[in-house]
Length: 188
Image (cartoon, rainbow, N blue to C red; front, side):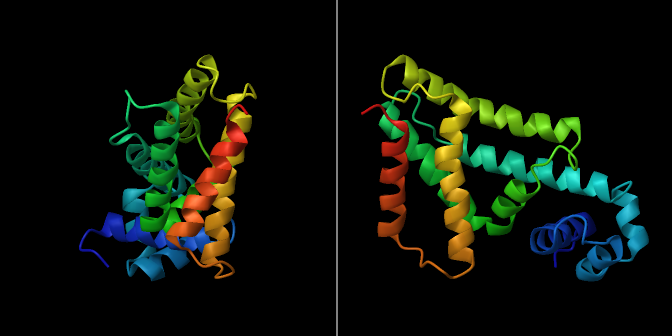
């Protein structure tokens, strides 16, 4: 554990929410895992929902910072897709729980408006990339959200499969999946 109780609480919540889900995780479980008293959690977060939303927002900010960092603005659409794809992989490899948590808790029932907005702002970056590619005649004319589902959905499922040790992660596998996802969204 870290020396920062708030960070300990967030890390414990991340692990438990990812493993058990929001509804099956209790504040006492989070407190036990973080090695703090339940009352300490309430010093930092008003309730479990506020904790979930704080964690979601932090994970989303880290995720989209990773994707946008070093984005090749002047590159080709193919180079830009490569960047988005492999930066997503970079984030997922270094933050497996956060990557899984974002996907499994992207639910309007659980998230407040600020959390949903933080995710949408990040997705707008990807939508913008897709629309620009469409305007150049390189990316399929399907709605951007459908295109996102094709490649982002594939990555989420790929990392679930790797996490379950059903599939071994290799550079060749990732390069092949990237090529398949590119072929799925580009104009032929």
